[in-house]
Length: 164
Image 1 (spheres, rainbow, N blue to C red):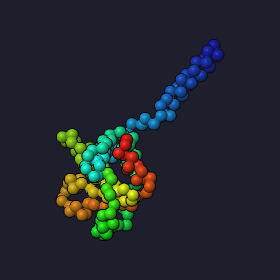
Image 2 (image 1 turned 180 degrees about the vertical axis):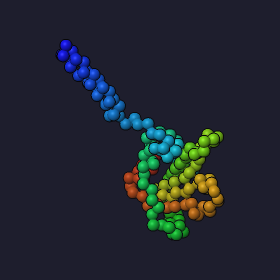
Image 3 (image 1 turned 60 degrees about the horizontal axis):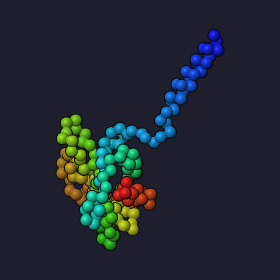
């Protein structure tokens, strides 16, 4: 009788513990809207002719994009100098970022939040915050444009968005 109880308990424990490990070795994590900060879509356009190259809605890629550290480099007040420096650089891609509106009642239309321009042969990006993002008052576009000198890894990721 004791053997039957011990075997039953052992089998129950094995079943319960093996059930806990199901799915823990895969990377099929489902990200919530909070995990993605309501990021819904990334569109990649050719900067040369503005042709849509790729649309990304995969939550894993969106999460990776959100994980990029973004900090505006020490270029504040140097917009004219940077624009002059970038005149010789060739724009490669325009990456447009969309999010789901925060309002409970919306028409289902995504909000454009930023456009990032990448350049060939230089690790500099231009980030333009969409004027529609600021709902309270209008802000001149010169205050919504930022430049960032980024690492090779970040640039590789941004360029890879064209081929996902």
